[in-house]
Image (cartoon, rainbow, N blue to C red; front, top):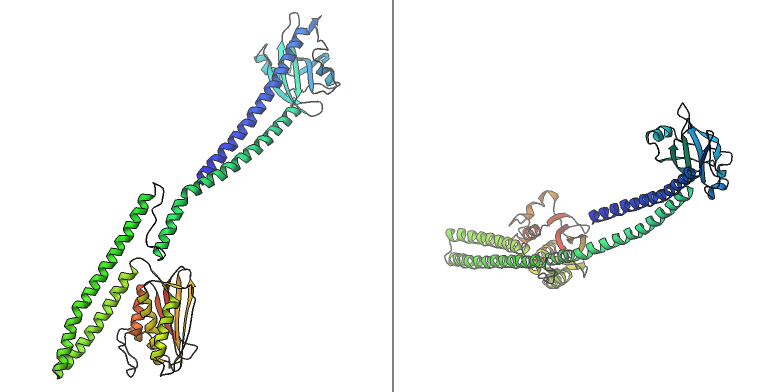
Length: 448
């Protein structure tokens, strides 16, 4: 667009300048033609008598008016190269003035005998003059006669300025029209690309399943290839999920058999087998959960309502911890959406809130709010005993339990941390204004 605009404007400016120059040259040529005719008349009607030269005073009617703007004069060269009037032979329009000629004119005339030479000068009223001169050698006269004619260029310059201003205005309008046309053409021509970009963004954010293929013929192959890429990614994700499910099924039965056999044959070996089977089950759960999260986040984006998930979770957890007397206060915007699968958000929020309910005394506060253009924060606080800052990293390790008296496997906050990282986010622990622990998960946000 900038290249087209620059080239168009440069062309218009050069064209306008060229037209002004051509108009000026045409006007000056017309003046030159008039002056050439005037000199011809002077040469024709002038007479030489006893060495003197005399011109007819009525050679040009306009030249009879004082300071009319058209002047003529008869002159002769001197030995030192100057040009001086002859016997007061000049037009009435000059009145008591003489024509001023530029230095070097006599040399030009001498180099071009019998031919007219153009020059510029200043008139009796300081007006710009366009002049012509011709040198004639008469028989019986010692010095040649120089015929001078000049005309005021003020009117010509005024006409040129008027033409240039009018032309510039018209070309400015034309330039404005070209600018509008070029911008409209480029915008209209690139609109399908903007639409394609917006559709790709909608697919990435989970607001669409695929691209529409109602594009111009130049872009339709690109839209088809992008749709094929999206479909391929979905197939890859589905295969990964299938492999995860098959692995879970393949490992679940042997571990269960080992645990069952150990229970039926109590003893030191059975205890070792039971502990190791339990550790194996935790490891399997951990790695399968990470595999599922990676498969989901590498595929097509999905939108999950944060408020709906929290409402469902808190109604369930409220019933579970009713006997403990924990009051859960929560708040989330109805237009806030998680860019990911519902089950993953259930695990992140469920484990975080359940942990707060376990260790909180009577209050748990849950907040979900936008923190950036594409991020939101899930904050869970409780009024429990809290956690020393030097031990907060430890609770994020798999199977870590700082309070052995509380039920659980020690995987809750580890699951939250791993899933948040799988979605490109993070988990941070701090002090709550309620007196206990503050947990904040940074997660991707989908557009409403």
